[in-house]
Length: 199
Image (cartoon, rainbow, N blue to C red; front, side, top):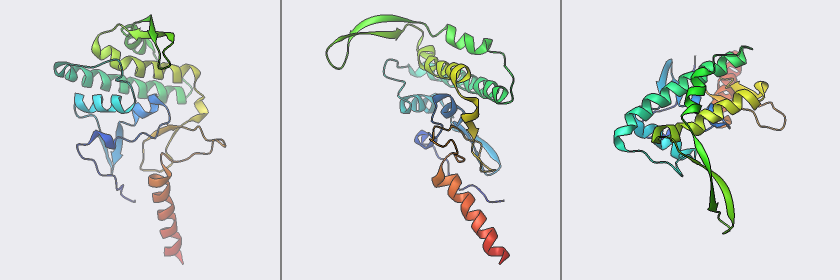
């Protein structure tokens, strides 16, 4: 069995953003390295950096003391998302009440603001506590995927050692790999070595 070459260090920028959907990028904050499952969120700072990379920190910041709560709740939301999405893929409807609890605390209200063109526009502004503000858009993305997503386009990478998910937005809907540059090429290289070895 070919070993994965992924190296993990303390840089949260290494979290793969290959899901093509926020809910699936959430699942991809856990990955496999060799035979081990690795949580790429080791601290609240890691979660915060991931949210920033996803463009979700524009209107919310968090105090250092709340980062442990952010880590705990983000991991809970990720485990819930994985469970609901896997059930959905198996043709079952999971218990969405825990997801609704995340959505309930993410309250917002319309506000009139000036947009980038200097015109007035209605914008929804979150009124929740800091952790709920940060995780609310992620919970909404999970809800959106489960209610509006095309189940056939939600896939796991075809490489046998990879556990990453993606939403296949390709025109032909034939995407197989989380990334052609990593898993696709590793698979092709392994197939080539098998073929050369048999000749």
